Image 1 (cartoon, rainbow, N blue to C red):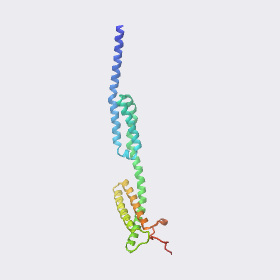
Image 2: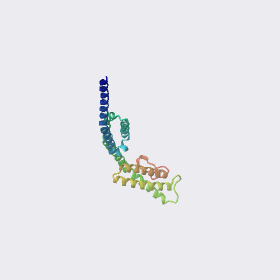
Image 3: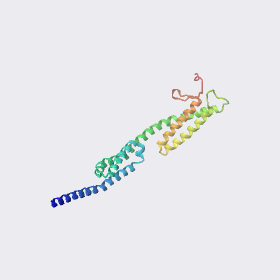
Image 4: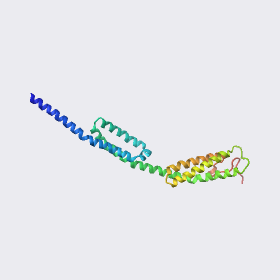
Length: 211
């Protein structure tokens, strides 16, 4: 009986030792797997956060789950799930680069349109402002001071937009150009300028001239 009990105790102890050994052997690989995922995430930032935030959030959520498994000492779960999450984390950089290239192309196309339409708009506003500034009185409904202010803002913003574009900062250039366009349009409205048939009119009121 004692011999049987001794054998049973030995087996229990032996199994426990094997389990501890197996568990211990997985700690470092599991820890390293989490480190690798964190490194891949760091390498993809900040472009990934800027251009593909949803994908970054997905990987971060899965990493949180793996961290929770590690804290629970479920190293097997970490090792089982880590490879797929690591692959996703490594893909973030290329996915962000592709999305950035797509956005930049779209912005450049938009810039081409703004570059064609904005200077004539600003020039038309300036011509009208200069003409009205020489008069003692302006037509009713025309707000010359507001037009001058809008023109000044539009000119300054357009200069900054062009500088940004020349520096390769198209993501800064296009928003500034849009702001410049809004200011110029506001100035045109203050002058009661309109855009009939795609060309700017320099008349502030009344019907178009005859002949």
